[in-house]
Amino acid sequence: MVRAWYHGGMQNNRNLLVGIGAAVIIIIIAAVLYAHAVGQGKAPVDLGTSAVATSSIPAEGTSSTSTAASSSADGLPVIPGATVTPIYATSTGSAGPKAPEYAKPLSYAGISADVAAAYQTSFTEAQAALAKDATDWAAWISLAQLRTATGDYAGAEADLTYITALYPKDPTAYANLGDLYANYEHEPAKAVAAYQEAISLDPVKQAQLYANLADALIAEGKTVQAKATLQAGIDAKVVGYQSLETKLSSLQ
Image (cartoon, rainbow, N blue to C red; front, top):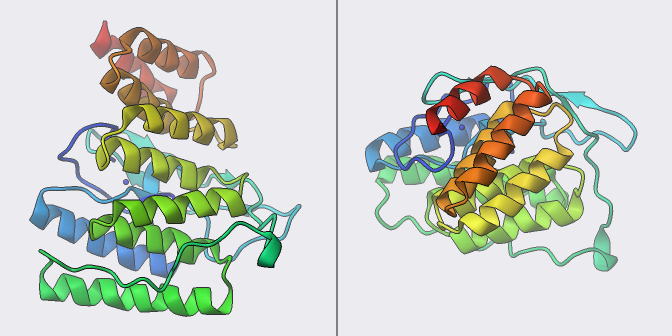
């Protein structure tokens, strides 16, 4: 749900400009998450990590175009208009992967009443959507963002992991997993693996994913590999590669 969105990787204090034109449920959550982040000094899961699809899931063999647009805290753009790889459930019903308990209530400890009320509204909408269709991509992304915002990182990880099982060609869940591991659970090795998978699936090849991967590698103490990652994005002239040139120069 292409997250929540930009932090530039491992920074703890980062601002978010939410992508426009995404699914209504995602827009509502992203706006609330941003307001909560300002009050709490902690940014939410980013929607701008990769192209955001809408809540309408295209049939296999079709494609959709994201209208998401956001920018990072340092002004680096996340390119809008990305054509998203067809997103469809590859397995459903009893034969499919076991879904997390989507009705598990949110915890609002330490969250103001007005923010909690907004979260609950979005949570109720996600529950209604999943009650109708247990494979609803946008609803699962929304639920994962809500769980992240309310501190249920294990729940968010379960939701995002389930999305990767249902929609293995979707880079968004992997990108959001990378953000969760890097910026909330502080597990850079897992973040590296998630970002690498997102990059391999991203049809547009956006520079921000390369930057995030580089940050995760730096957090692991692998600066040489981080530089190589940035150079690879530059050599491939990925979308927004100029930002990678700037980042690489800062590491020299």
